[in-house]
Amino acid sequence: MLSYEGIFFEGETLDLIHSLEAEQLPIVNDEIHCTFKYHPSANEVFNEIVGKEMEVLLIGYGFNGQNSGFQLMLLENVTPYYINYEEDGKTLKVPHITASLAEGAKASNTKDLHFKRLERPIPIRGKFGFWIKDEGKEYLSFEPYNVTKENEPLK
Image (cartoon, rainbow, N blue to C red):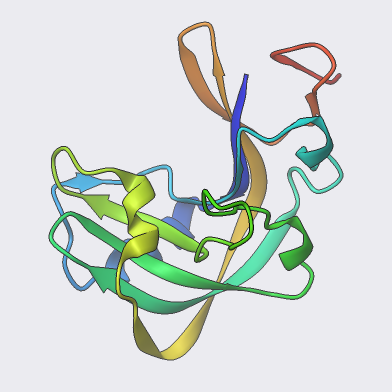
């Protein structure tokens, strides 16, 4: 099952993000991503951009002892795909990434941090992908996802 879709950051970008953390918590997130939609419906699965590299800007940093993360600014070519709404279904969640967590903390709470503006925006690049949970396995995929047959990527 497709759990969520978004931009995933790897390699040097991951290292850069962790190097910018003012305070790193014990659980370091090694699957850093910005969720664009949690449990997308069939018409919310963006196969046309999966695997494509995208640029966003780090614009703020927040820390509260439980969560450490960054606020993002999404660029014009990316914003139409960001459909991550609050529970009210009307308000978009603050685009963010979770860098590290305290024991027992939830990554989903990073959106509620008070983000302090960075001195300057920092461009970072990631790839649009899908986080899939299938038969007890969890993995990242940069391949199109077949929404007509549950859990089966398109060939």
